[in-house]
Structures are given as C-alpha cells and as structure tokens.
Length: 250
Ligand code: APR
Image 1 (spheres, rainbow, N blue to C red):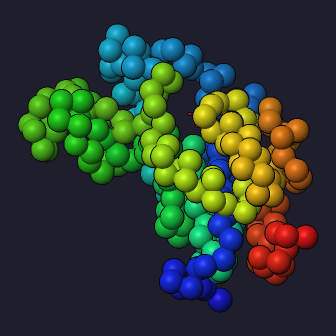
Image 2 (cartoon, rainbow, N blue to C red; image 1 turned 90 degrees about the vertical axis):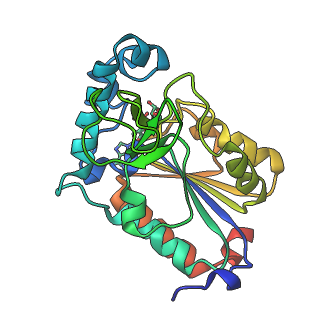
C-alpha cells in the first residue's frame, strides 16, 4: 500500500547501488572477470584526458554501452522493482543514490533518484554545458541544439578525475538516514565507497551490504546478505516493509 509523500514522516532510508544490481538485466559490471575494465583501459576511455586525446574512441566506447542499455532485452529486474516498491510503501523518505549510468531504476519506477556518476542516455555540450536527452550514438558530426556548436557533445557521465554529481544532496540524506543499504557495488571507487563510513560517523543508522560477495568495505557494515540481487533484494525489502520502522530500532 503506497504512502503519499506528505505522509512520509518516518525514518529515512538511503540505498547506494552499483553495477551488480543491473548485472541480471544483462549489463556488464566493471570489475568482475568478464567486466568492462577487463576489456578496456580506464585511461583510454573514461577520463577527460582520453576524451581530449581521442574523442572518437571515447564516444564509441559509450555509444556501444548506450546501444546495449537501450536494447529491448535490457529491462529492470526484480531488484530494481523491489526498490521502487520500497520507495512507494515505506512511511519515510527513500533515496536511491546510484553509481550506474543506465536508466533501469527510473524504468522500474524509482523517482527519488540521484545519478552520482551521470546518465548514459544524456549528452552534454562542452561549449554551452546544456544537457540533452540522447538515446542514439554521439558523434563529432552532431551539433548542440542549444548553441549550434559542432562536435562538442560528450556523454553526460562522470569520468575518473571529475567530481561526482549532487554530492551536497547526497551528504544531506546520508546525515539524516536511519538505514543505509549498499547493493551491488565492489566498494572500490570513492566517494561512494566512503558513504558507509560517513553514515557510521553520525552514529544513527543501521548499515547493510547486499552483494554477490563481500565488497572491499564489507567489514564496515553492521550486517550483510550475499547472493544474486534478484533474489536477496526483494526478500530484504519484503522483510523491511513487514517489520516497518520499528525494525530499525531493534
Ligand atoms: N547480484 C549482486 N551483486 C552482483 C551481481 C549480482 N547478480 N553480479 C555482480 N555483483 C557484484 C560484484 O560482486 C561486485 O562486488 O557487484 C559488484 C560490482 O562491482 P564493480 O564492477 O566494481 O561495479 P561498481 O562497484 O558499480 O563500480 C563503481 O566504478 O568504474 C567505475 O564509474 C564506474 O560506477 C562505477 C564505479
């Protein structure tokens, strides 16, 4: 039974997600044996320097990932849907902070969502900074529809060495939450990997890791559940909603 936003005066929940939540939807992770960084070097395709040196190579790397993300057989899975249900039925604010640049959380129905590493399905003009929805390939032949500049469009994603997005909003919800849940991330990349420490500093929230296997930061979490996201996330959300806010204080 969904709870209206006005009635959400209960304890807040922050959920951090990583590539592992999208794996069973058919999208590759980064650091698994078959992951993206096993096939590409970060410094060749995911830094501002790489884009300056060889923009076409960087654009094609993201074009290939965008084609995958928009293909018909990539759809939200039971874990994405469970998080949308949590947001709808939990009697307090639920914020999903995702490192992922796919749109599977939105398509599953999550609304209160922060894409801290940007969005694959958006293009940003390096001349005027305007951001455009973009589902096709980005090439140097494309022009910005706002300023008309040619060849200035890049994926609206955060590269290594760049500042993640909406860090102020993220800091606010981490400070306020009563539950911090990390799902499908290896805990290798900061600042996301440090969120659990940030939450622990405030001394208020319960911390839970849901992953296929222990992450780099596993010991920082008060509890953990391991297994495929499509199995462990729906079960966890069912238990959380059944126990309600009282379950967070026990
Ligand atoms: N269910 C749950 N977890 C899974 C599954 C699954 N089916 N499959 C893999 N995992 C776990 C892996 O065990 C791993 O711990 O998901 C995690 C994925 O880790 P990474 O590949 O490192 O991805 P992520 O943590 O999201 O990377 C963070 O690094 O390269 C940058 O910008 C990129 O946002 C990315 C960031």
